[in-house]
Image (cartoon, rainbow, N blue to C red):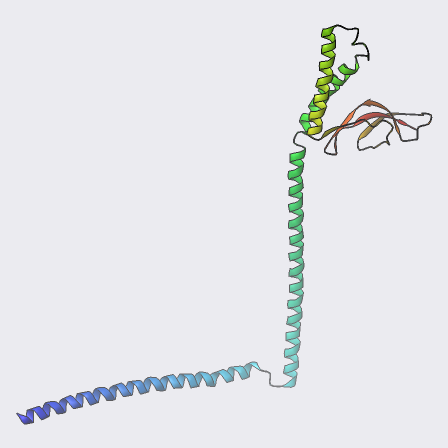
Length: 222
């Protein structure tokens, strides 16, 4: 019985010893492989680095020339890209300004065609108001006086509406002729008038926010 126990203990010790030795061999092998890999890599890196470095003075000069050429090329490309970038920014800014100007013009001149249509109405009212001589209302009946006053009041209100929306009458009597706002129907010699001065206004003109909607029809001194 005692011999059986000794035999069992001996086999247990042998198994433990074999397992321990096996683990030690495995760890040693892994460590050796790791060390070999690191040493091999460390040994290879200097070799690769040595292959990249020039071996003679001439090779150094050639390498410097090559690097200098590459650097100059990169600088030129960088300058070209910078110029294109600045031009693109300038183009974008110009487009933005043009779009803003177009939007503002669209807001300001959206009623231009409507204003042109109303100018004939304004001309008719002015002609009607001016057709009544001064003092003629006193001898007229109440109905006629009321009609004349109504025409004048309507003309005044229409002028206020025009002014509120930026439509201004152009009546350039005794002013210098401006081809942007005036249209010359004739020229005549007028004593005391400087050449190029408007001496007669046949038809009043109009401008909308400084843009000519209808030129004034005028006679000019020569």
